[in-house]
Image (cartoon, rainbow, N blue to C red; front, side):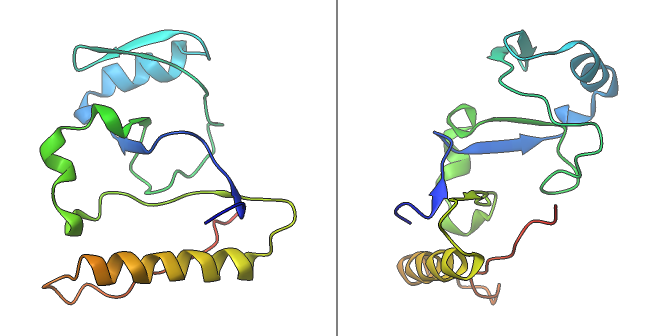
Length: 129
């Protein structure tokens, strides 16, 4: 997409701490940037904490981790649809410019990895503030 968005290095995946409410409660109460937390036998440094009223991206996530810690087999299926792109607009980019760029990229991906399912077309939508 060129310089249409400010990027954060690396893809991110979200999850619900695997239903362990005590674990997610401990994480949300006692973490701050720079602290290390352990999830599923892996250590992660906290790089930020969202405000308590942040609605999330999917409505279900409690934590986001780098995609590189995802099981490799999760990344083998182009139609898995487990990723969404989120970006902050560059100051000199309009929503229409960003939307056009995202739709063009989505079309390229859709053509490169056609789905056997009728799962709709690539899309772009602004996040509510």
